[in-house]
Image (tube, rainbow, N blue to C red; front, side, top):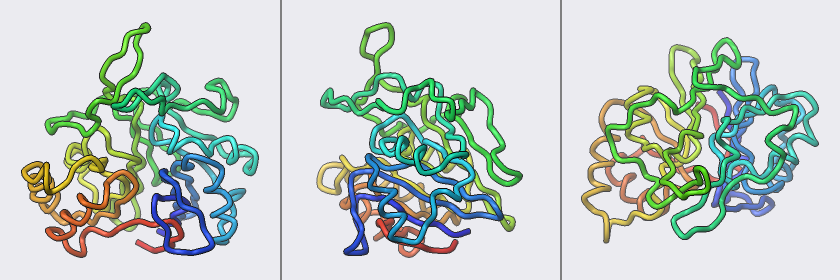
Amino acid sequence: MRIHVLMENSCCRDDLAAEHGLSLLIETAGTTVLFDTGASPAFADNAARMGVDLRAVDVAVLSHGHYDHGGGIPRFLELNAHAPVWVSERAFEPHYNAHGKDIGLHAPPATHARLRRPGAEPVQLAPHVTLWPAVDMPCPHAPEGRGMHTLVNGERREDEFLHEQYLLVEEAGRRLLFSGCSHRGVLNIREYFQPDVLVGGFHLMNRSPETDAAVLQDYARSLALGTTQYYTGHCTGDPAFRYLQAHLGVRLQALATGMQFTI
């Protein structure tokens, strides 16, 4: 499997743009998947400079309904004339962060003909690629979406992140899982899917060793169980990443715009 990081908060090349967002292009066994599109069209400009042809994408997936993962969808639909974009039925509901800022999706329209809805059951996108909705996933560990909320019948309610979805690729006897921000809790996600490799954000950007040492220690201890390899960035946050890497070592690697690597 080949992974191209088209957008992430940080960057490893001077000729590419970085922004608060995430976009990954995944090449696996004859299927090319675009996982998220960053906050703007900039992911597509990066792709062109990296030698990645978005017209060759077979299917696109939006991990959840926040602008920093789906803001570039209109640009993708312009560049690619055939790939469906799988989006949760609830992704276009209003979404706000802990400060009340609107972080939802506003384009393309929820009725766009290329958008596909997965429903409550897993959808097989290719013989070895499955899209999993978050609806029935148990969450014994506390999720990391503190303060984020949505509107239900005009009333603000805590966001349960039922619009979150995950991409599972089974290749060469391994399970590789992709998660955008892991709002429902990376520990819950890891325990539910039991992946060999987990790629995505951990949403620990508001955690630091100075204020949340016990919480981060629990994350480090739990993530170290088993043999899962992690690639993370975007919403994980630098302080949390450094703390976790000190405990996980080479099992935890950082993502950056411009990275192109084989797993």
